[in-house]
Length: 160
Ligand SMILES: [Zn+2]
Image 1 (cartoon, protein in one colour):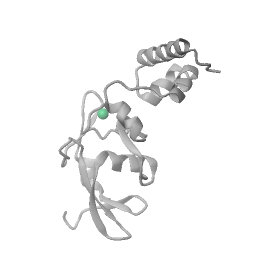
Image 2: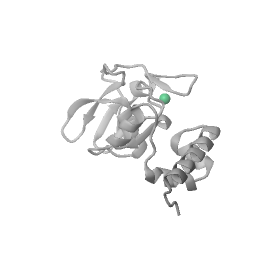
Image 3: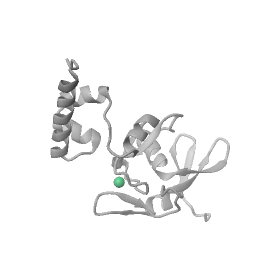
Image 4: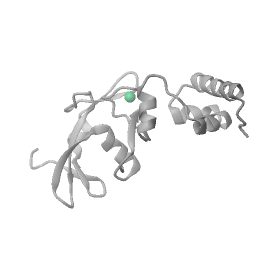
């Protein structure tokens, strides 16, 4: 990296070369934003950062850095960043969800499986809120709501 590199503290103690970070990206027609820099063998974008307190440089996957910026803090152990678009090279913050390993596995192994807690929320939430939370179109959100409601009826689980 050259001397005129602009470094920015993206969250407390974590600094990156912000110019390259903001330029190495390309928006796709489907809304995904592809990382154009270095990539992990699994397809994830990779980028260097520096910890200010220790002056140590390390690499991280770009979508985790993006989630840190979104949250304004570092991620803690056990927090996973999930690509809801299932496109590992995508760094669109709107396509990333914060979850745990269980949620990530549910997302990446094909069809998303809603937990009972999520199902309770979905059954009572508006179509608009469901669409926003899970990044779905309104018809798809309506379908999910109908599907979750019948799941509860079938299982005879009390919702309210
Ligand atoms: Zn995407």
